Length: 160
Length: 160
DNA sequence: GTTCTTGCAAACCCTTTGCACGTCT
DNA sequence: AGACGTGCAAAGGGTTTGCAAGAAC
Image 1 (cartoon, each protein chain N blue to C red):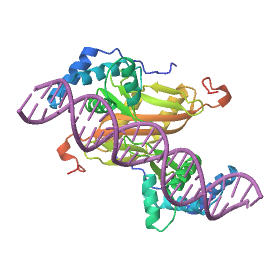
Image 2: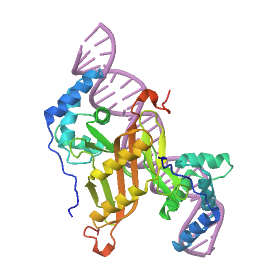
Image 3: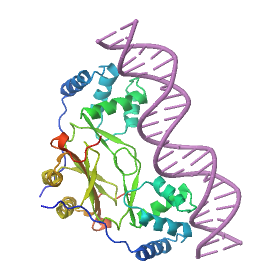
Image 4: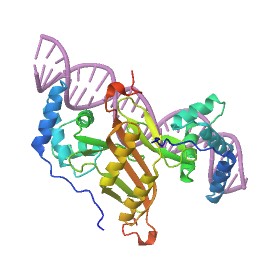
């Protein structure tokens, strides 16, 4: 049986911008060039990234934005569900475009450090069942699995 | 059907101390009064706590330990699996005695802020299945579910 | 013109580190 | 005696904030 890797979704930039503009207008926030530029650059990031990585990337592209604006705009993008923020153990916050990999989870090999993103429909169902036990409706979830190779020497991705 | 709340396990303090002492000896770390005292106080904490909360608690009890020692001992307790560390979204690290609530997960109501700890055997199985798809053996997992009340006004735990 | 946003730097919080002193073996 | 652990304070990294200048409405 094939392992269900999560696959990137094609991103419709205009759609994202419309979504963001609508959110800003609705919330009486201003539609500034910095905010839209940040959304564009977020969509160019390949997967997870930190606020600082985005800041550095934008400066290599010649964009003039401050870290403060990067942080505050990422927070706005999060409020309107265009980006998701992850708190992986011990590190700084990781952001990611929500449209890129809908509803995926993370598996970490603690032997080699490899991270796999996967998508299991059964998990979605189970999560919904669990929430229902408490008369709630699950909106989002985050599952981290920490695993090891049965025989370390044969781990095909081990470090070193 | 009854919602499966995770139930605290009775804690055998002597057993914990033996486990920790054995770990220290095996790793050639020293068995100091500070380290054992910290383990005792960890066992007195009701649930999740931050390193600083433990530090403050110990000082209310008259223990003289520094923050540095609290942090480093919590790390040792983590290495020998006596405590687990959680990284909840946006906040500081939360620690918890592993023996207290074995293998539980977390459900957050985003309307009222309530957090429920639950334990679903099916989830364990599913997690193991997922890891097997990648030829790995799951060791630990962490599932956070974010959910809402179907009708907010009726949320029995809503804030305000 | 008023209010919000930006950029910069400083502040902030949590955690780790360097060093002198104390303690365990 | 030697090596490790502790306590203190300072450093460190990531994120937020205060304020003056600039842009959106």
